[in-house]
Length: 417
Image (cartoon, rainbow, N blue to C red; front, side):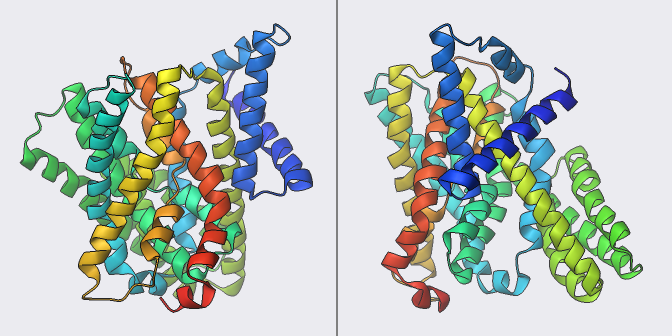
């Protein structure tokens, strides 16, 4: 099957499943699509084992596509740009200290906690996975996913201030978390000797370079937007940022995700205020909201369809279930510890750590990183464990984060935070 036919199949499935969800389930679109697609995948597996349906064409199709590459380099840039484009820079600046610490220190704490707890927990279940691979799992599962967070929080009725905290952290910890993952992956595949200066140099180059490149793109495109008043041309310029800018970031070996976040923030705030007419702002918002919805639909269908080629041996399935509380415990500590250090400088609402823990959803980025793991004896186990955490996160946490927020804190208290 060629690329066009694959895209046609994914779009068709997404459209039909979205219609079913809107018509009957009435779940948030991201959750509904994942639930229906997983049910569809397990249905195909069951019918295949009964000899009613030949599932091999679907399995071969999935094997023929590098889904990790597709997610990381095909869709991620556009989704991050779209998320940052609609985030208010003033609101983000008010939370900059919390977001900055959680997106860096929090990621490192979570990575090592998940790695250590997983090593001992998986071993107790009889699943022997070396510590360095457990640490790699910690790195890929620690970043909270802005794609999943943004898609679900909009439907959960979470107050704006809390949404800014969670979404802002997710946008930035994604880029930092990917770099941490690459550092540990280098140790696993033998491409790095593990010197502290090598790891720090990579972090500085990837993170600092991504932030700088995003800023350069944002300012250049801002100037170009200010020089014209034609919404078709201006939308094309933003598309150039997402495609050409992301490709250039990869060529320079800097963080493409962080570059997209910074460029999106600059264009969405300074560009919207000073370089665009009202008509352009309206058309640009409509365009990127549509792109965001479309790519989210495709993303969650891809995640669900991937279940077709996964194996669920009992020890690995048990490890996946154990990983859920491990990841939540590590997330709580990674949020609560930095918040405790920051309390002398700012106040936090009661239960803020609990809300940030439960609202920190895992999604497509963790799946993409897991799928990008090189072939080896532990790859399939880590993919299955990652899927277990992601499915729980999106479905269970995604459906309950809104009620949890209202019950623990209440909208009025959160809005004052």
